[in-house]
Image (tube, each protein chain N blue to C red):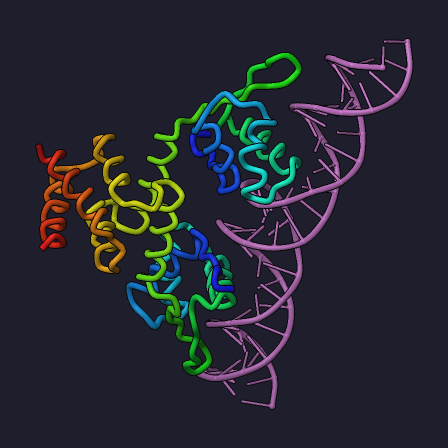
Amino acid sequence: MAGMKISAAESVVMEALWRHSPLTSEAIMGEVCEPNAWTEGTVKVLISRLLKKKAIGATAEGRRYLYSPLVSREAYVGSESQGLLDRLFDGRLAPLVAHFSDSDKLSDQDVADLKALIEKIGK
Amino acid sequence: MAGMKISAAESVVMEALWRHSPLTSEAIMGEVCEPNAWTEGTVKVLISRLLKKKAIGATAEGRRYLYSPLVSREAYVGSESQGLLDRLFDGRLAPLVAHFSDSDKLSDQDVADLKALIEKIGK
DNA sequence: TCGACTCGTTGACACTTGTCATCGATGAGA
DNA sequence: TCTCATCGATGACAAGTGTCAACGAGTCGA
């Protein structure tokens, strides 16, 4: 039960709730329908699937519900990132960074950010 | 058609071919069956789905086939990594590294590797 | 009170994925 | 040549996903 996976479409709803919560379903739809060309029906199903997965919770407010994340973005981002690292880079971070540098995907800003970050970590 | 996705199970077969190719289906099975508790039938289907997706190619060798990757590991790793970065870190690398450092997932070795790497990039 | 609207629940459907067994052709040994 | 083993192709099935419409219960204005 620990491995309840949040799918791609579901994660769009999660992002809306991580940005701001709690939200009504109406508010969620306001944030995700247009950008994704989804109808209300689609979002309703995503919400109920997330409820079933215990990724979000609901509290009654009048005759509707207010939804909030039960899974933190930190936890989600952490497991996704760790998963990628484990699958593709032997669990280590440096090879991932090397990959981006090798393929010229790093802007000067990125390099500066990384440099500052490493300095801070190395302390 | 450019977005033909390689699934998790399929990527296990790809990894075998990236390690060494070309390989017969027998050799592929030798590499992936036991570690994943897969039967031959499972691997056969993974191979034919990868063929249909044009992720691998086959050349006849006698009455069997020799399979080779048509998609490079570099390209695969690149799109997977970029996808994660875009979805979760606004496309930037530093926040990802910061995430790992914030959650104490970096070993001394990792930090040293990163330091050396950044130094080299910064030139 | 009655009808209209709203919101969540359900059913539905096509497609992908993971998993495995069976079929049919073909080549090799007896 | 006849039979058997082998290999790839195909069929199958449950679960998950993306997508949407229809239903049913409750509520609010008239």
